[in-house]
Amino acid sequence: MFRRRGIDGLQGRHVFITGAASGIGRALAVSAAAEGATVHITDISESGLEQTAATIRTAGGSVGLAEPADIADHDQVAALCGRLTESHGAMDLVCNVAGIAEWGTVQATPHDSWRRVIDINLMGPIHVLEELTGPMIDSGRGGWIVNVSSAAGLIALPWHGAYSASKFGLRGLSEVLRFDLAPHRIGVTVVCPGAVETGLTETVKLAGVETQGDRFTKARAHFVRRAVSPEQAAAATLRGVRRGRDIVYTSQDIRLIYAIKRIFPPGYKAIMRVIHYAGNRILPGAQSARREVAR
Figure 1 (cartoon, rainbow, N blue to C red):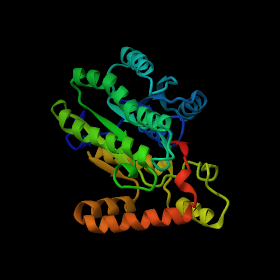
Figure 2: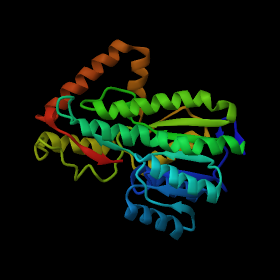
Figure 3: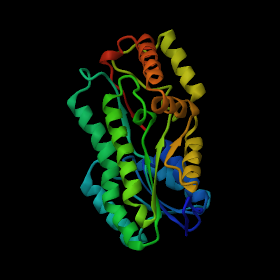
Figure 4: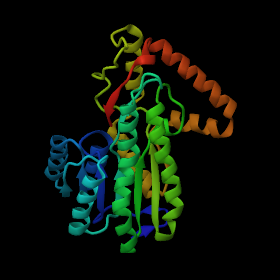
């Protein structure tokens, strides 16, 4: 069923995806279904989840379980995964996509924000893996796990303290699982997206920051020009899974900066100083700002 280098196609496979109501999660669900998988989807947004399921079914795809859940709530995840396994058996591919982003300096970020980001971005995937990895091992079929981290799980982006803590943690967890689960023929891919256009770039509000100025407007336009679509990110993810990649990048700039970080640390530090300086120039007052966005 599985080649050593990755999954040999999704036809007839069972795929579980969190965060499937929008963005990369929805694009992954649509793409996996188009390749012949039965997709099982969850998200905290029930209406968005229904839209994703309808899109897949209208295109002739197969949706098994489609239930809303808060992945930060272990009891909810355990109940949902229990029903999933009972009805459909072990999953072939598990994709942890759901996450939120809140940013600000350490002094400006409330404790509740730190806790919420960690609970959703790190503990959420852990809750899913606690419940679904066991059945995958017991099935003896092998399988694959995708954990969506971020560029902020690789490099030090401005004001991303809480977000980076969660995404670096998820990347570290993925690396450990890659070796722990290898004897069971379960592979692990961590996805580190850079800029992804989810439609929120035009409406996002940054508390305490002037977003109508020319500098911010130009910066947002630059972001949109460089951003990939959720569909492109999903395609890169599934391509990486088929090829058995450890890390999937959705943009070459992140790949390059991370390579410099590993090969030439002084150069990486210089780049980060420039990025942080430029960020403060673009967003005056951002030291006290926070942002929350659903991925």
